[in-house]
Length: 275
Image (tube, rainbow, N blue to C red; front, top):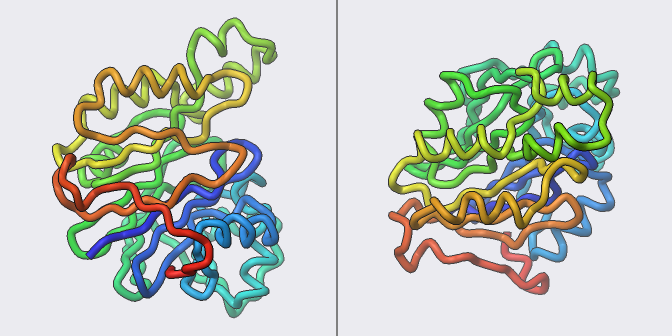
């Protein structure tokens, strides 16, 4: 059993993550327009027919911008917490709204999606792990600080999308006003490169094959800088940066130990439309 994962976009201009197997898939957040989501999936050989549900982390626009249209067009259920729904001003079909509660796994075919609470300046924000058999994928972005639930779930992951939003020096010396700098680094904003690296080095399981650095700031970070920072200490874990401008390649995660051939990167040509 393998899982196929990608980031369709990751950043303050839109967030959407795809995780699936040969039969079904889920989207974590829908921060791109429906049309852009479809275009990026098509280029990867992915089809919306495999997507069975959308899970919403919180109500900020870069995570829900395309949600109404995608859910309505494809009749997709939306798993969203009561607090997030209340503060989002979304107009969703009531028949498609499903409850989301921290610690309660949601079965989607052979997948299980488990939300857990995180620190972020939103009404009721959640992160997620997606599991299938023994394989575990984490989606950990928009996190103000590392907490015990994040650490516990990170330790389970064969692959993870982990926020590395800003370089501390770039933020301090950058053009943002002081109140915005303090919001970003104040415990309910975002993780810095250094905080993300500390989590990775202290709690990475030996079988973590892929780490995708996510939600990078356009103003206060540099992809080459943070990639190099992690590569120097990554060991056998494959490090990549999730772009804020286009989709990543489609990756295959097999659950085997890093370095084994079955964990190789998989790019699906669009004409195959396998997933």
